[in-house]
Image: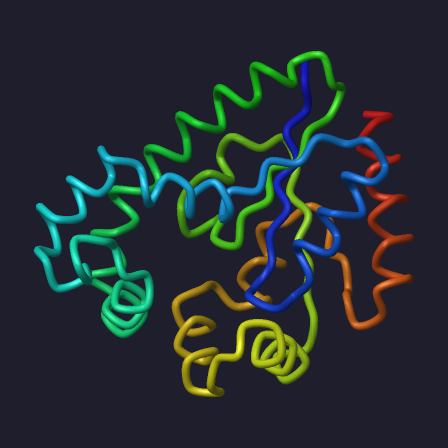
Length: 194
């Protein structure tokens, strides 16, 4: 039976860096956020988005992700509506991916909102990546070219590190990437032996 390990952490914590390190070790990683971005543009999803949000998030008949982001990250009710469209589709996609990786003893399900979406319930263990908030903010500003306010808006729509730590089995401190990678490798070795 394949063990499903959730990998989560707030925006800018370094989840993707750790996930890429795990991929380099030959461990299958499902990136929920990347898959959700692909699902966002599927015809069925576009139809649902038009039905729920109207044409305000479209420019020239094309989904405008910036308009959608501004709408949902400043309004929890709108974000909830978006999640009700995207999360069930990601869950179906993950099941297909898991089936394709069923011969692996362990797989990683990476998701920024693993707890918020409820998908942590499908995991056998959970690893949380944490880093000081100011470091996370700086990383995201540099990576995504967002303003401080835009980053804070996204942080405020996610669980805090403390909330994630309380529900996680393992915590990786990602202030130093080499140490974080070593700590992650040790955690995976523990998980493979259970």
